[in-house]
Length: 469
Image 1 (cartoon, rainbow, N blue to C red):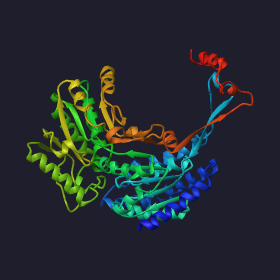
Image 2 (image 1 turned 120 degrees about the vertical axis):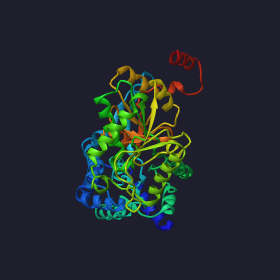
Image 3 (image 1 turned 180 degrees about the vertical axis):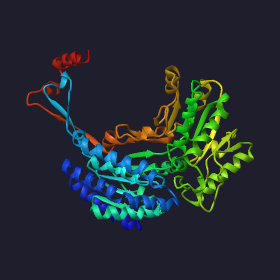
Image 4 (image 1 turned 135 degrees about the horizontal axis):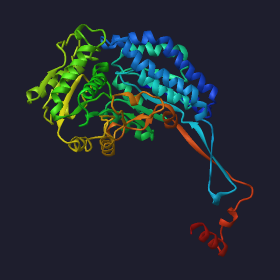
């Protein structure tokens, strides 16, 4: 998109937002309702577009991982939004009596949203839900790596929203860079840590506050008390989280710490689960493809590097990689050197390094000093082990004894910390993130402010002694 057109779109929506700084619930509800109708009416077309972009992605995955969460979040906002926006009385303390205070919610204005390609519906509509329930207008930049989805969503949005409510922007990297330099009232970006740094730098001259949903290497940890059937179950839950969307998930388990005497049992369980759920994987309609040739080459190159460095690759099915189909079967990796890309960078694919450990504190000591991950997945039924693990590891979010699920409920904030991001949204957390909570102090006719005015004499000194004792 031409930068002049992009700026003109922003100016129009910005002017409209400034003209109506207080947005009633009825208008917010109307926007949320239309957004929900967009998803409900367009779900089949959107899932087909996503499958076209990936080459293959099962409609069931799009329904489960995208359509359901956004409709659940929209329903939560429609049920609770009016309560969230009510003014809240607050006590001012005895020294300000009889004045009163309250906190009133106000929209920020125009929220910019940069959505990625891996879950393009969820990571567009989720932030839009937070923006709309808070009373904002929005501009949405969709990824050029998911062009079929972008065109489909843009057409659906144009049919339901005025351009001064929601403006959907298409275009490549130059458009994205220009988009992040617009003086939004808030900017939400989902993507890599490296690009997130550039987005934050682009927003800085405008003092635009940002929410960054980034990524990183989210670990799973199987504690020492997990064995037998529990180990088998844990392996299955880790593989389920890893193989959703062929591992192209920002909160997928990146690698797993396993007690050293249970590595082979874990491999057997992981392979068994994968073969049961993805029989004849190469032909399976239930297994996604890698999004493009560049990502496929990156992943296979990292496997080659690890193997050349002495790592052992353990295929978890009989299927073979197919560059033409961008099919990458799941593979576990043992003994990968720490300096290989698999161990340094976020994998974002169906590759699972396994890290053996002997003592629980050894595994925790490996995780804790690393950059803080977006997600963490400890598996244990031991209360002491759980307390030790959670007491030493800080992550954006945690799912205990499963994977991915902390990102689902609207009642839980979703976001990163440190290298994995800043700020959180979903539910009331998203409402507050995209709001200004404006304090209002209402002075009483009778008040003591006259005692605080110059000249400062004995009465003032007596009062200050009383107030500060």
